Length: 170
Image (cartoon, rainbow, N blue to C red; front, side):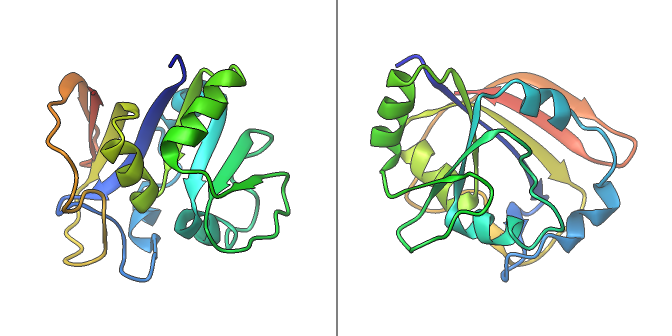
C-alpha cells in the first residue's frame, strides 16, 4: 500500500482531545498561532474524519476543509452539504480503495477513527501538539485495546505558548 495516513492533533497534558461533550473551547487560547498545521494540511490529498468530529465541524461558522476531498466514516445516515463523501467502509477497505485511486497522503482526524486506524496498523505518522492544560475528563486520544507500538521521534518543538509538539513515525 502506497497511501500514507497521518494524524495531526492537539491533546491536553492528560491525553484528552476534547471535553466529554466534544467541546474544543479549551483550545481557543492557541487559535491563530501557527504550529505547523498549514504546511501539514497542504501536504495531504484528502481528509478522513469520524462522525463525531464531522458533527462538531458542522457547527463551525464555515466549512473547515475548503476544497480538500473529505471522507466521513460513519454508520449513521448523513446528508453531505459541502461535497464530502460518506462511507461505511472499515479502515482497511477504505485504505485499499484510496490506494487504488492514487491518493498518496491522508489526514486522519477524530479520536475513535484514529484509534481504529492505529489498531489496523495504518497510521504512518503522528503529530501531537500537547496543550498545557489538564482537562480531567474528556474524549481520550488513546484508549484500551490498542496494540503496543513503538514510535520513532522525528521532531520535537516547544512554543512560547507552552505548547509542545511531538512528531513521530510508526
